[in-house]
Image 1 (tube, one colour):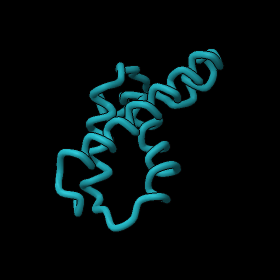
Image 2 (cartoon, helix red, strand yellow; image 1 turned 90 degrees about the horizontal axis):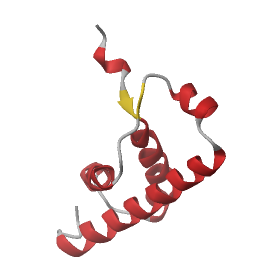
Image 3 (cartoon, one colour; image 1 turned 180 degrees about the vertical axis):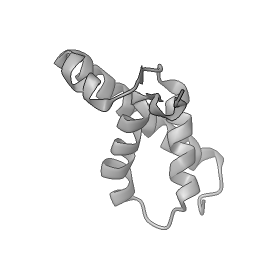
Image 4 (cartoon, one colour; image 1 turned 30 degrees about the vertical axis):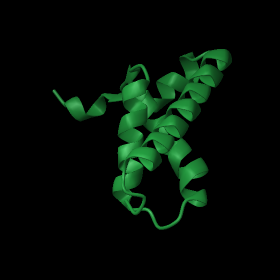
Length: 91
């Protein structure tokens, strides 16, 4: 049984948000900074396990997708704030 086929769909949403909305506006931060941000955000979000990303595209109602994206935005922004307030700013 190939277990690596299963993943939390929120991982995709969190990393997309970090890549598109956070990284372009933040300079001089290590990969650890962004990975820690992702971990903190993912721990604040529910899990939504899928095998294939396309499953979510076909079976997710647009309102639910919008709600998920807003939850990701809040979780990532809160995670960034937490890291910036509690850890060395050079991370």
